[in-house]
Length: 270
Image (cartoon, rainbow, N blue to C red):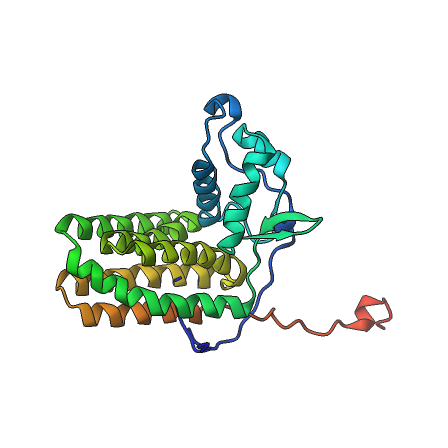
């Protein structure tokens, strides 16, 4: 079953959909890594994986970015053979695409994949928020509030990359405190893929992007209100509404362009 409705955060409603990946996204990646000299080349496979996922969540590695093994190996201070299993792991999570004879690149999700990701999140996250309410301490709830405060501060300063990252962190905090390792692991993959979806299909106008992020903060606070009251049913409903609203902001079709004025274009006017 694929829901083609409206909303989500990483959320479902059919709306005018548009926008393609920016051309610059195909440039080889200059991973924001510490130099090998600074790190002593001590990256484990998991360290490399986490740094790459963080760069994706922070929108520093946009969809389509080429991941050249030599550059990654130099950035991490390791051999190419050490880099390849990390790329395979990311490919298994559908965050990286591996193409024979062409190498690796950051995945470019299709509209169909975007809808599937949000459908999966709607199936998982109401259960995770119920488990969070059953297990969370006051400290866990305070950590969620702090995450929202940081998100709002990032939005106010114009740092939309950080705001989106923190929005994803909010959901991951819930999953971690929920105590369900399998669902938490699946959600982490979905959050990474959602970040790629938002980079690819977010509203093209800056004001719309900012409004979407602001709505996310308000919805997160409304969700925390239900969590604080230990109202699992209401919290699950608000989570679904939140995810659906985010999905409804996605634009899957490019903006319509007007036909060119051939008289003006070809210099035949007058």
